[in-house]
Image 1 (cartoon, protein in one colour):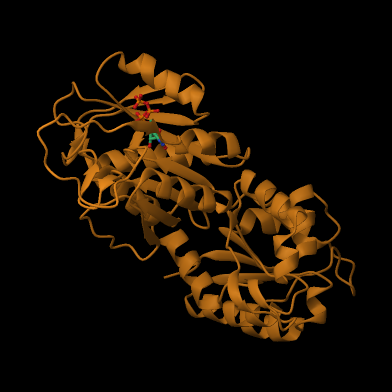
Image 2 (tube, protein in one colour):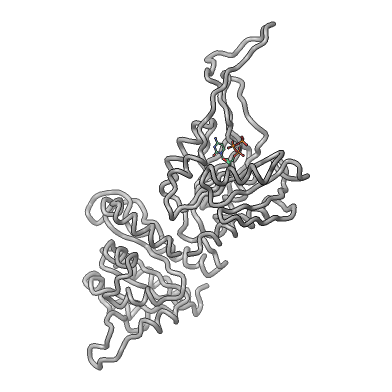
Amino acid sequence: MLKDKKILLGITGSIAAYKAAILLRLLVKEGAQVQVLITPAGKEFITPVTLSALSGKPVESDFFGTTDGSWHSHVDMGLWADLMLIAPCSANTLGKLANGIADNLLLTTYLSAKCPVLIAPAMDLDMYKHPAIQKNIDILRSFGNHIIEPATGELASGLCGKGRMEEPENILEMVKGFFQSGQKLIGKKFLVTAGPTYENIDPVRFIGNYSTGKMGYAIAETLANQGAEVVLISGPTSLPVSHPSVSRIDVVSAKHMYETTIKHFPNMDGAIMTAAVADFTPIVQEKSKVKRGKENYSIELKPTQDIAAQLGKMKKPTQHLVGFALETDNELENARKKLTDKNLDFIVLNSLNDEGAGFGHDTNKISILDKNNNISGFELKTKADVAVDIVEKIVDMMRP
Ligand code: CTP
């Protein structure tokens, strides 16, 4: 699968360096040519002898050969590689990568590399949570690097939490995915809202809408096909989720969708808001079923919170936000207003005046308006193909 792929494996000073030997073995077994680069601190955790035996190549660590003074060219190595993988990446190296510090061969090679870079951080849970580390991760993501989020479990300190390097087998799968299909969103995390919301009137009745969730589910699946991890926050639908990288959280009301979305957004690279969220909800939800009567019956409604607008306020510069607008008239004008009011990066407009577009259909006809005033129109397509166009736009937008 990885036959003749050229991979730079950077190893830094972390207990998880022992797992790098397993990762190296797995990469070599798949046919990859692996050049190991190790930092001085990395050598305290695992010996170059082990690594060179596994890779079949001398391990590089110094700028110059210690015996003959020959220059170890970081530029050549950076140009040689199809992929650079830094696993484990310590807090120290993470900070240096984010800030352009170049005091060892691994760092200079990173700065010279023209290939995609995957970074697998490994550290204690409190270090990982620290705002300084989170900021450096944001910076590295904004440069277009892919972060392999650490796993949750037992740590070298004896504490338990998020910080341990992802398991070598899982990293291997990500590397394979990267080469296999040219997946462009490996290491990225997205949130997708989908479907309708139901606002209860009484225990048996609700205010809902005709959204089926098809567009949102297609986008979630397409993001996952590109290697992303997806949290799908779904209102009531009958659709199944089949992709293992999509985890679905079921919600019912606008309030529930709001709270769940706000909670998950800070950890995401982006959010795609396809849900048809109710704009109003009954002020009072009756505890018992309302009985038939002869008089008119009115329900007083109050506005719900605007989830997309709230995310627009919370959004960090490295995060991306995509909205939808389903309009019946003044389509462009309304969509543009939503794009600015909600601080979106782009908005997907569909008009109910277009046949085959909108709720329930298996097809859709969209235009995309972005924050730089570009507008692109697309033909009527299946929702799966429309999802591909939207995800392409997301990939473009995320390019540094
Ligand atoms: N949206 C949201 N939360 C809401 C309402 C809308 O997240 N409470 C999101 C939708 O998922 C969509 C975008 O905002 O991505 C626009 O939704 P839309 O219903 O078209 O716009 P509204 O702001 O509700 O305006 P209106 O219904 O008056 O057109």
